[in-house]
Amino acid sequence: MRNWYTRFALLLLFIAAYTLPYRWVIVVAGWFGRQSTLFARADINNQHQNFRLLLKQESDVAYAHAVGFFENQYKLVACFFLCCRVGLKRWLNFVNKRISVTNVEPLKRLLAQSQNAILLPFHFGDFISLCSVIWPLLPPEYELIILRGAHTTGLSFNWINKLINIHQLSVSILSATDSQDLKQLLRKLRKQQVVVIIYGDLSGAFGTAQETRFFGKKARFAVGALKIAYQTQCPLLPIELWGNAFELHKKPYLQIKPPFYVRKKPSIEGQQVYLNAIVRMLEQSIRARPSEWMNWQQVGTYFQPTKLAQ
Image (tube, rainbow, N blue to C red):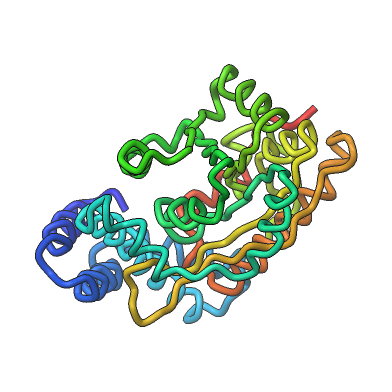
């Protein structure tokens, strides 16, 4: 979406976010997304092909999902602008009233037993809302650790840093590409009470990869989360955020799925079983709400040659 229309639309959306009521801003954002069919046809056509070829959808259904994808992208940008407008003091309270959490018991049981956990989100919803909903679920003695990649250093993390500093939250942001940060992460997982957030649907372009089947085609996914789970014997809990806090006509929710352990040594054969299970969960989620998965524009990286795990 790096064309003149996108830049113009984002400028107008930024102005709208600070001048219009919340629900109007989301409506305006959706309208800009739908106008992509006129002003960003190449982007729409690319997404249309992704839905048609990977999900095996009829052309008209695939096109509708492609339009829905861009509509959702603009709504997520609007959500971020509105986060900034709400302000730090009101944001945590607002988002936790709007977003409900389903199946929280698996996480509560682990924390009640003083166990650590690795939360494995997929790229649905916005990252600031995800973190803002997770924080209140943790007991005071727990620290939340966010493991970010080299590609996630923008406005979202600046906003999260402000939330951390002003509200004195027990949160650390570590880099997946920094060896010292990774050593610190492993040390904390073994010796302290922590919960870690690591994305589970990254392509092989963002770390050591393992082959699997993604919608029936050979693909490569990053397996860093599996290796960390094995080395520390911490359970992995897949989580998903549907919707955003400002879209008032759809009730957003965060779903926590049952935990599983990487019990066997994550050799190529051992980690294959776990990776396949994670990818099947991802496929199921994408099929349920295809236009809400944020990684469609980078989907080609899942099928490119990358460094495989040894």
